[in-house]
Image 1: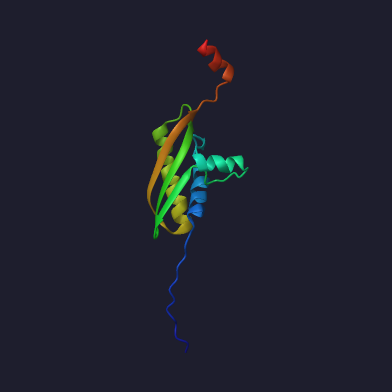
Image 2: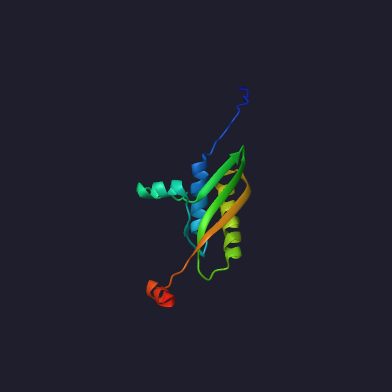
Length: 126
């Protein structure tokens, strides 16, 4: 009979992959107008690269993952509820797809998108 050999197995998921999964999850949450990015994301936008990982920072420590998400919400939504929905959806999808444990998710709301016409806003300033 053949003896089974013990093989050390290791699967590493790149932070960019986790960020993309998180971005896809965020896009499914109502109330999010868009992702907010910093300088690096601005450079990617200039170069014409649109990525689902925009505005998302991922840190891994073994199988534990910390995720920071920067968003802009739509005017009129309950910001706390949107944030909690993002945390739940991202945790679920990242854990299901990677097998890693999501230890912490920070949601930073960096702005509010108003869908009103610019004319109405300009009239208010006069």
